[in-house]
Figure (cartoon, rainbow, N blue to C red):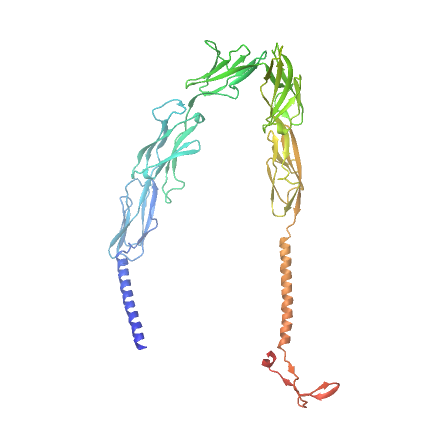
Length: 558
């Protein structure tokens, strides 16, 4: 027992000695690296060139003297504990002030100073180029930033309109102002015609600097982009059918910068300078539209296809209306010496199913399109017979029809009755299919119209709202009844809580009665003898003295 105690005591002594040695070594190293006992109220300062600055230096210990050393605003040594370095017009770029103190020995704390200067000017120009640019060629933009400092905090940003294109930072470590030149390569296209480029010089001086960071922006550089003509192929298809006796007018429109000159070539040495050209069965099989400007030229070949059969609508142009009936007519001309034996009508709808509508010797056909016929193609085919057994079949070009139909509102997404719980807004969505695309609006009563596909409703919304889907073919209105519902969940939860509390009170009351009854004394009559001292009890109508013994708590529990 004593041997064990001696070993434990020896262990603690060794541990204590080592701990003291470690603490002595640690505090010796900390004391050797102690900081200078002065504090600056700012760790660093950022000052505009020619601006004012004031920084306090305070001592936390008694001293023999302290002061500020600086090429401007120096403070001679004093016994005060708070001194201020102050300069009202700071113009020395390389200033390096420090606060010193004579304590046990002299020490000092330097104050980093950043002096900044915004540029005298920022300008943008095109390098070695004047005038309009040519689409697809590369050009160099130059940004000149004059007399800015410090350059290492400068960022030059390039913009086209409001879009940031590029930004450049600099690694030069210079405190004095410099002139900076940076460039950007661009390759403009026709969409850039009239675009504005600019460059922006921004000094990012950190948290101590001004917020937002100071910046200077160049005047915008407006560019003009020249590009070769592009002929509108929609208005000038590559194949144009011409029916005999029915001249057609070709229109050659071209976009270009500068505006192109339009001409037509109808063969050797036949040039027509005009945007339009009237063609007929006497026109050469191929004609050429030539769009030319200073950048280049574009030529489009047009095949003039002479037709002897054609299809068209009777007394109607433009889109058809679903549910209305129209008459198609098949023109057959110059078919002699043939005679018309049969005329067949065909419809090719969007799902590529061909219906044959055979109507012998009838050159007109009645069509009543529905919405499924939008984009369907009709054409007629004539079977011709000459003298003898020879027969020939000719087909017209396809006539593509556009069918406009009134809107159909999606009733799945917009039921006729919508419940709304008080305090819980709902969003109604009104989607409608139609051609042209319908305009959706909501009516919330007299003169209250909301133009949107969605409508947020709440308890304040009228009982009836109406979705109106409208286009040029008609309009569809759907009535929605807004049914206000009360949220009974909080009430039900409250009733349940009251019920639980009431049941709990009853349970506690019953338990208390039972517990009180169980606590009262009880008596045993087993083997009792009559005794005057213990009183008498009645047995079979007679008084017989029976001794009673009071049971203890342990007997009751047993």
